[in-house]
Amino acid sequence: MTITRLPRPTYSSYEWQEQGRCRTKAVEQFFADDHELDQRERREQTEAARMVCAGCPVRERCLDHALRVPETFGIWGGTTPTERAQMLWDVAG
Image (cartoon, rainbow, N blue to C red; front, side):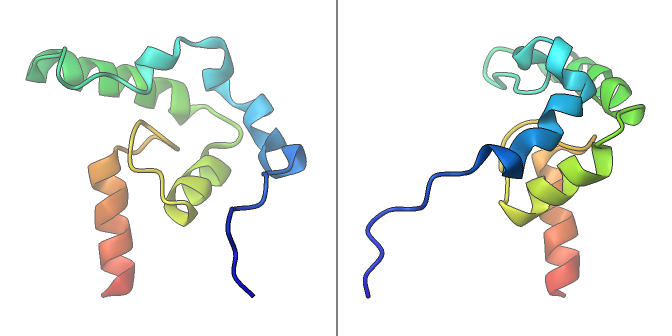
């Protein structure tokens, strides 16, 4: 059997995102265009996103999702793509 396309995601798989604190924030706060920001601006934007994530009721679920997919862009569960890559590397050992 050959799979020619991925199955469509079901809403129930992602409904936890409706509870995220980020739902009311601008997407750019979590998915910055690195080419448009200097290092200071990127650091400030990352820290602002982390502040939102810090009190989020689905933070752990968000991070788990980002590690499983894996999400290679944006702030997920209060972590950057580099931090998530390091986590996966550490687990792979």
